[in-house]
Image (tube, rainbow, N blue to C red; front, side, top):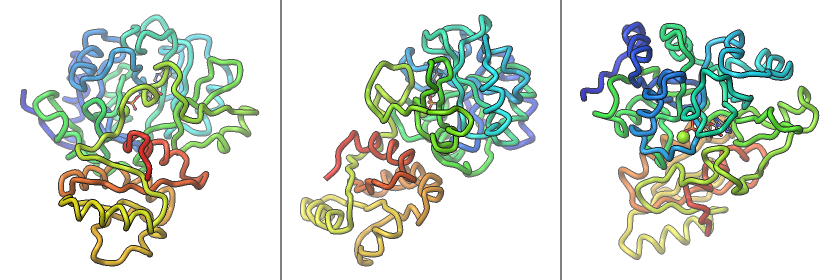
Length: 327
Ligand code: AMP
Ligand code: MG
């Protein structure tokens, strides 16, 4: 199958493809999604096939406005509408009880469904043009680094899907916060740019799962994620980074240090480095593209391990990319 890449001009065709049960990759503000008609079992099955994704890993259903909530969820609490009025469109996914029209394959076998309104004009236009809720996980091969540029999607999905909509680099850079509203106490299943602190005033106490492995209720907890093709390991400071770097060099490898500006200030010019900038936002925006860049040129990645609370969502991805390893 040929994979076409294009922009706005493909929107109508993209909408028809989704309606016809085909797959279209599209930009959102978080990462690129791999979309299909969320109500069509066969179409959704082909998402799992194209990604090589385990079937018990649920997909997020994307809608264009809060009015569509009732089409995909049942017993929608008032708090869901309130949260959406504040955080949507945006990087917040809300888990609710699913409506009958959403098949179990979309929700990884669960009776609940994750729902989000993406904050990207192309994504919203695609959903409207398709006229159906769009199920979409990140548009990478399962276990690989999430795509933040159309080119990344092409690397992973070339020949597997008919179309990629190109909306440039994604603004946020890591996946949405997933908030489960079906439990007595709202719980964050996956951290993201919308933090517990931001949600708390609207919900009272919000719990986080703190990265512990429970069941595969939320993807990103049980399976390998964000894995570069070469080994990657965490480092907490510049001294350790330089020490491991030199050890790898002596062993004949080509290492690279990926870190924030503050750590890199103590790393001299002869070391290969990729900067994550100097704020949580810039680090979120550049982590996945830095990993994809690094794995093409180097064969050992040293990735900064962040302790600060503002970096918690990013650190969640970093730990997975490193398979939990830190020097
Ligand atoms: P991906 O888009 O590939 O990053 O994965 C989809 C995300 O959706 C996962 O990280 C889950 O946290 C979330 N998700 C979707 N539906 C549900 C659900 N019914 N229950 C819990 N989490 C969900
Ligand atoms: Mg993913």
